[in-house]
Length: 360
Ligand code: ATP
Image (cartoon, rainbow, N blue to C red; front, side):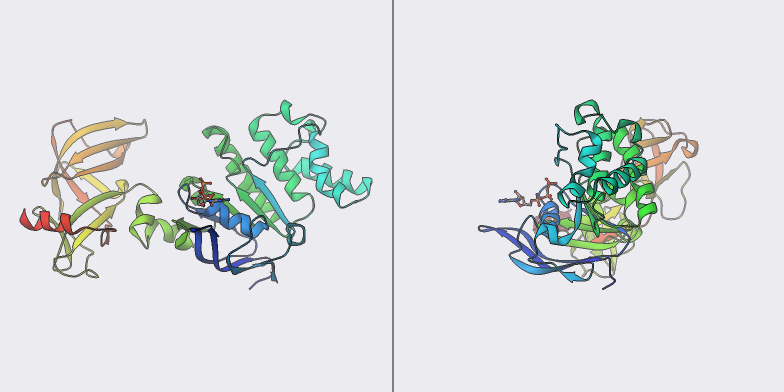
């Protein structure tokens, strides 16, 4: 393992009878931002808390920057942490908050001052040094929290929904800002988020968690373009789901067929996941087009969401840039081309669906 990386192997956490994290293994590479992405309750924070030393694993091992840290104390691990609810000290100024970790380590006053100056400059809060947390906006507070986490020169940075409590605009600005800071410092960072846009925009690697397990780990492109499971296909990025049956390696739905089911057995139920931008609509029929009826159009200014019904009654949504939108009228017909379908066997009991379609 390279020296600044974080590695966890077969990490498991039980709370009584409940397994919150099960056999989680990954490497967060040195110098990169790795995002742990998943819905609420999927075990993301528990993984991060075990890496931080705030929670003891029930099983498995943890290495931080080449050292096994499974049972070492939080102090020994030298991790910097920024949590959504990891409040600043209200009775301390911004500068005192940032200096806190250095004061605990009994660094000289001169050293503390120099480091605080550097960090406040880095997070662009130099003019706010003597303010108290109450006198800052939410976004500014999280920037102070980051400066405080970085002050003792941690080996790695752990961020748990750091912008979770902020409004969309501020989140967006802070994301760009965190990206810039990370480029400057190059510190190995692990970011927990339930926001797929945040993960895709910031991270070099994404680990998708679901019900305490890792569903898929990979680059943002791999997660988005080559989802390994139906869960990843629907959780990361929007997706239409078309239900059908496997006939000769294709998904048959009504009179129509989609490629991509060679890996499933003949006659089995299949779900095809198609991104809304892979639903192309046109006024003339290209090869393989399906007739669709326009049910509703939402114009978002630069794209339109066109809601369509296919001949067998299933619904799909197309996202079409407005400069490429053909004449469409609600109630009218268009040709629909479904591209890049990712086909999976349905999760959970699907026999009922399969029977229903077989009868139809
Ligand atoms: P969120 O985004 O909502 O924070 P998460 O993916 O971070 O979710 P965790 O906080 O890791 O999820 O929690 C995973 C599961 O473990 C949840 O079902 C939670 O209720 C449970 N859990 C977490 N901490 C404890 C605890 N101390 N005792 C019992 N159960 C816990």
